Length: 424
Image 1 (cartoon, rainbow, N blue to C red):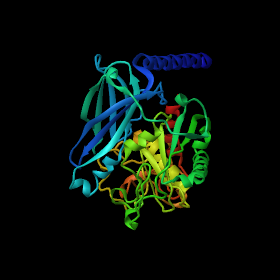
Image 2: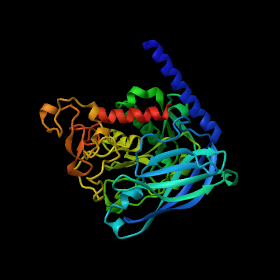
Image 3: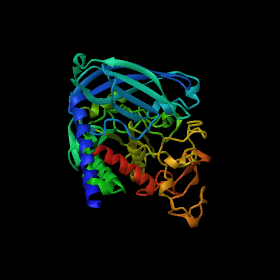
Image 4: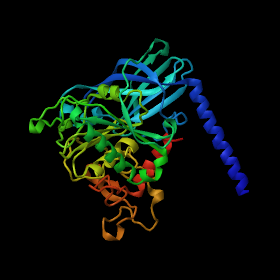
């Protein structure tokens, strides 16, 4: 009976995967449609303003998991066949705008942020719908528009030179990580290649990525900036760089980000890319990471290995920050009356959906942060920038402490699920 059940299960799985692949071939071509738009708003409102669209050869993302199964992200994009109104693609994501709108400035001003959506190139006209998650966890539509693929032009952007840093397999069956250089002048070319290789090693030697090397590809784009170094407004340092990364983003000195999303996408375009990691030529401590957006790391900081994987946890797996004592500029980022969407924090509103099934029944909830419960999955108070009301699964995970290769089992499982999402 066991063997028969196993055979039946495998047959059903094969049928499901075949159907998913057929859906891809039915609705899409093996190309990428790039949609550029402006995200405009403030703490009380936002809207999407379409800017442009073009396509380029090859779709490197998954061809089987076309409908998002995670439910992660502050924003959501849905693609419908315009005639049948059938949902054919969806993806959750976050952006810098959603963080900025929770800052004091976001409560007083209205700003516009560049953003980009990449989807498989449709065979027929589509309706693109953008949604935003409320503080209580409900999605609502903020904008939509129609696109006809016959009226979209092919990209004329020249593909940049790349270096292969690790090859696990086919792009359509792997998590494709792309390293982008910022603040490296032509005179820094040797340093750039060394830094790329060093950070690829940091990424691949950190658990759980180290367990899935055959499901991961890493490339580095050999792009150079006009000047060497990174902009640091608080030190009156301003540099002309490839993607314009700067410290003091949204008012936090260590937050190293860029708002030049279209320039960033121009650099990575035509390369297989599921996650963008920007290697910044600076020794000052800093970095950042946003889910399905990008991550940054200060290349010469002694904690660079930790910054890379911590910010990679945000960017790739949607992991939340578990610290609560460090200063941040965002305010009231989480509602205590709703369950956060991130897999590694909880308000206990819907804890059954989180890591409860990974815990021992003997572990108390909440769990005291004592030596008795070190290296034990529990429910420890303090996470998500708040000392009270939000809980984390581990006392001192990489998402909380400056600790390389220290992802807890809950975070590792979340990363594993995302790697498998891209590689199936």
